[in-house]
Length: 129
Image (cartoon, rainbow, N blue to C red; front, side, top):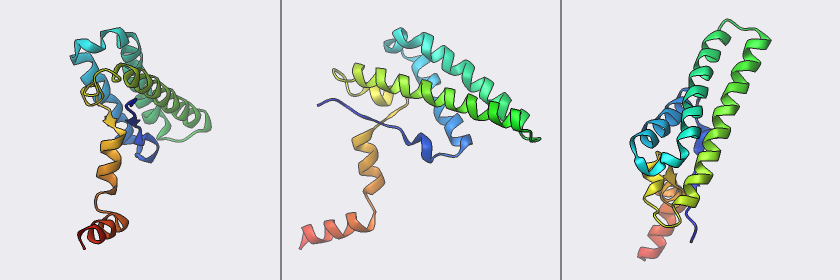
């Protein structure tokens, strides 16, 4: 089975997205197994910094500054998606690479998300009866 990475990026606030992206950069820089992806990781790091500058610049308003902020955020998102795709391919042989890279395994993420939902509790209670 091909592993799948959870990408809850769209549901996150901007500050959470930046933290998520920085965590990926940090973990992938610290692990030699991701050496082949270093050019993309370095680009991601640069784009995160550019995004943070654009966010600061856009605080005073202005259409152009706001557009640049959005554009920089989309670039970071796209790079994260590229890395996620590459990690999924690498993780076919070693699924632990997903968490080592800073991403989350979709199956584990889904289980965590649904663990205490109303439907999950009902199904658990029905199974116990």
